[in-house]
Amino acid sequence: MLELTDSGCGILAEEQQVIFFPGKSTKKGRLGTEHNTGWGLSLARKFVEEDCRGRISLESERGAGTTITVVLPTERAGEDEV
View 1 (cartoon, rainbow, N blue to C red):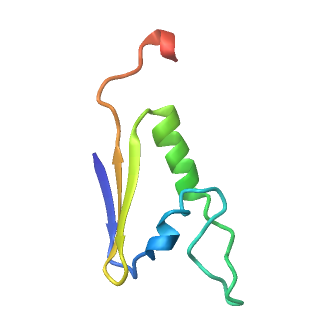
View 2 (view 1 turned 90 degrees about the vertical axis):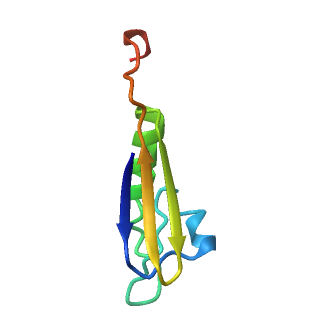
């Protein structure tokens, strides 16, 4: 298990539901619009869940920070599954 934690501003509950989708971000540019970055967590989820058959989850509290948890299986896939 790997936990990544920051002490930033946290992520609103309604935004937590979408940040794993491609192109979604909680960051806003100077004009108040979405940066359209938001690819990192969607690619991480695909890699962890589909390629490695693991789990990735998020816990965040507004004003207290965010923790991303990655759990990977301890056994490798059989040769016939590759």
